[in-house]
Length: 116
Image (cartoon, rainbow, N blue to C red; front, side, top):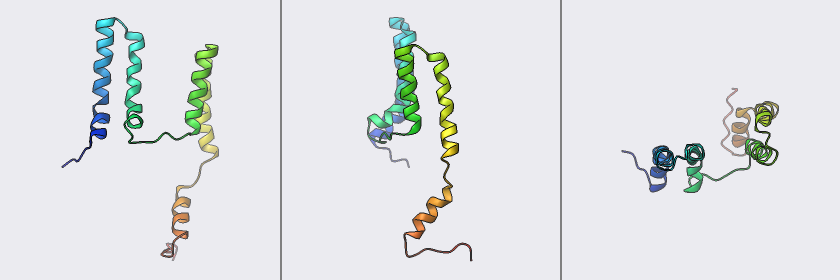
């Protein structure tokens, strides 16, 4: 049986709530264009209800720079090119996932040598 608390229920319902709000804004207020922004609630709701914490990542920094460039200088179109920096950054700074596991075991006395 699923055991959801209120936060998980709100997150699960957010796509339908966003769709309902979008339709209400569109049909009743003819605000289709600004109304689409309610769909930002879907990825943001886990942060609002406390299920996740916001971490400053390279991707978030690029997104903020893109929004600042678009709003202040109105260069939305060529500005999207900075998103190509995200995979480049992650390719350059790639860390082997097995290294993290090895570090975790090296700090413990129960290290099992898998090479034997």
